[in-house]
Image 1 (cartoon, rainbow, N blue to C red):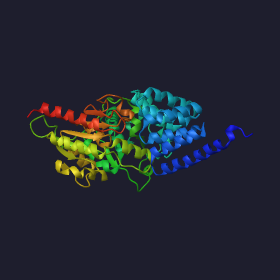
Image 2: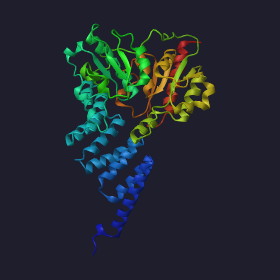
Image 3: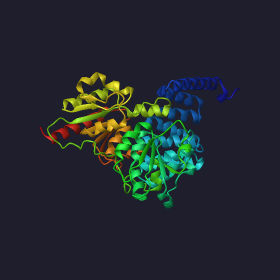
Image 4: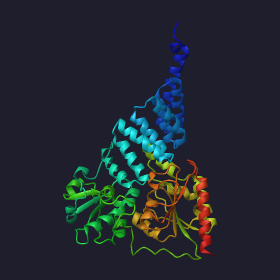
Length: 444
């Protein structure tokens, strides 16, 4: 007699598992992550102990910004495959999104013990920054050069290592990663200039071309002021610079790994309006409702969708502020700027077409408040020392810490957090309530 595990029922389950896996892969290709997660879950149930199907289901839930649903299949996968470092890293990612940083650290460290992979080291570095263990976090972040696809501007192996004898030599500091990361780490340019002293050669700062005008103006108050240049694509950077160099994001590990390092600078200009004193005139409020629209791969698409307001939340925010007497100024870049068109009659102004960061900073300097999702604008406002309210998803990046309404990175910013993944309604209500209180304090 045929054993039960090899009978017709078993063969049917195997067939269904294969069919469901095919459905899941099709859904993945279409970016339909919840459908993919359900299909992988069904395939795992049919196949018995296939931990990879469970891990695939969990990863699909994570990409759909459903960390609570991703948790159990990852736990099951870890039990079935306790020696797989990738599964532990995935579970660590879920715990990070659930704001359970200590559990995430344990998972990342187990994963690193099983396989010393750069991707896990990078995730752990960002988590340690969220745990305010800055020196460890920024030290480990130097592993980012080992990540697949890393394409540094200049060779990190030849970078300046903080040697004191190099303080009298010309030094090139170059940017990397996103605009928000650049704004966040500019403070260490001031620290480096202070360390080198007023008689040292000016720093050369190579950044993305859209930032040149802003940084030339906003860092001109430093002594000596850095020479800000746009990165050139025409010639290899190594042929443009033969001296010492270092990445901007490596400065914390070399100087003082803390949000308030000695000599920290902010963006400032005598040409920008001074912050208005509270008074009876309408409050001018800048609005940014969408993160960078990078839909090329699942991870960056996930970041865009979870950080950006949906249309209902955007409409409620604009209408609510207008009813409270605010003059709304639309600061959104890119194609998402047109999402505010249904409420344009309730706004006062918008950024002009083709506005760069320099002209945007001048607009921001003339506002009383900027309300932004987690994108470069939030970091720009903070780096300028201007008042800003940041709307954060439930699974906010570790740099924003946990549960706090303030941030050590930017004393002028206030944080408003989702209490449930994907739900902006409560956040918008809290923002409008806080703004109503602000208007009350200003008086009639």
